Length: 385
Length: 249
Image (cartoon, rainbow over all chains, first blue to last red):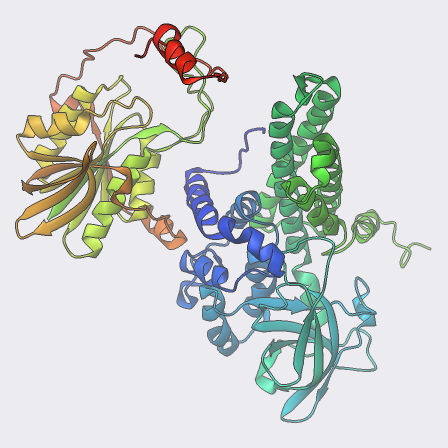
């Protein structure tokens, strides 16, 4: 791998320590977690003890006040390399918890953030519905103002961390007549009327993805997040970061696949020689290496832009688009270089191939990414006649 | 009680090292360095002594180039209180290191000095013993357990025949074996705190010690590649092979 230039000594020290944590506390459980379809809740608490969750949170909530995204990137890379891609610390820390920080009241932050930092309160976010994915305006879940409480009804699909979650940020329609009138609610998973069912998936076996049902759930008035009609804008605010984190994840995953495969072609023999000596292996891996180095350098720069507050929505979309497409290609080529072994579940590359497929779909599909980039060029069918 | 811990920056144990083509040593370009694993155990033990109230201060010391500061930061993140770098770009052999550590110890006056039993790069296993001799201090090498007994220290040592327990008067030098403890990983808050802990740099030549090398390396070679085994048909054939081919009996 090309030397990466964005990390200093503090980051390297952090990486070393995180690596040891993942090797000791995550790696031995991965097989079990993948079989049971969820990670043990305990791992969040252990990560919390090490200060690895909500690193950005203020010290009064138990955090380190560290907003530098490079630390999250390092954590993600080490979790993927030595643990499993289905351990969603980052969703908890950098995608859901910031809603509380940005739009929550002091009381809401006091109530929930310390538990999130310690890993005792696990977070999920519920946006997608059976009939509303990228098209959030089609959302049907409804929260009615009943004076002293909100009454929530509806269902939410593909919710990550769903079984383990204690607190879910739920998007629901608050104004039936206004298609953008959506509110965000802090819903505790053990409230009456909340139920969840695990979903069987192609990959991400250790990730507890569920469908959530809300049947006349009474939400206290204190649990509305910000303005009850501005949820749509709130949701949009975190999307660039979420997509950049998706790009970090895709590259981290692809880098591991590359390394596993390079090792494999050096040791696996055919026709009396390691298969890595064949020109096909050499050319394929040379091509992937070059692509990975190129994209890693670019994404690393975008991480610095995120830190500086200058990352644009279209740059984040471009990063997610290209890295997830590359991840898919790397997995496919790497399975091929593994031959039949690559189709066997006992080889990690086989599991990684399945895990990678979702990257081109979640957090906005490749097609939506192209829409965002295309519209940023002025090619917007809503404006250009 | 003040505890001094010596740590060495070595090539990370995961790195597949390569011998330089001129056989003068191993290639150190672009390889990852980290703290000698035995020294990590030494730091862990000192930090535990502090947590148990046995030690009042843990001082870590490293010797070598400016980049050893990274290793010292790791020790500070694990819980050491302050660090000293004895800076020198010269090659430092065990005797020179022992003399420099002795000079540091004279200044710091620790009651206990803990070192790794050896470093995984040169595997010398000499520094702790030399240091004890220079200071005329008691020594407990290859420690797998430490226990305080009033003003003395009981050290359980891993020796070939089993476990030996010795009682040492203080000050003492202890070298850590693998089973002394399992080192912790530093938490993020402790990594952040380590940035604020004092790290003093002392130039080696200011310590008034002769650090000139006494040994010269003739050559460094890769270990021979292991050959495949063979099957023998009988005990007699095995004996003959051991006697005539392998020449071990």
